[in-house]
Length: 103
Image (cartoon, rainbow, N blue to C red):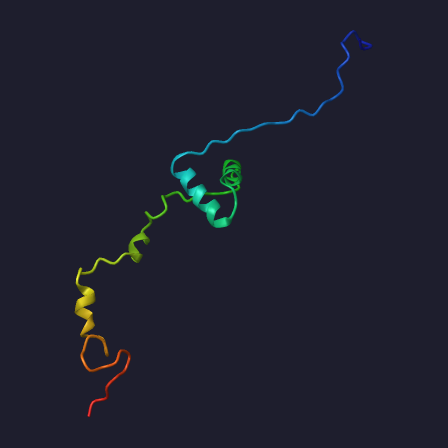
């Protein structure tokens, strides 16, 4: 016992801290895709996300105001209509890529 009647404390032993992080839903899907692009593990990115070191976009990927810019909503036969309009394409007697000068 100690000098004041308190029991002696055992020597200070460092105890490991174990933490578990679970990310689900669209955040988990985003972290998996990001991990694949960056060549990292989803678990490492999930830890960064949990600590606040990694911020995810507030709106879902592909739902921004610019997401539809890559889409083309033209007529189904557009390729057929343009063959005759492009120089050297779709007209008999002309080699593709050659331009004919007017006489």
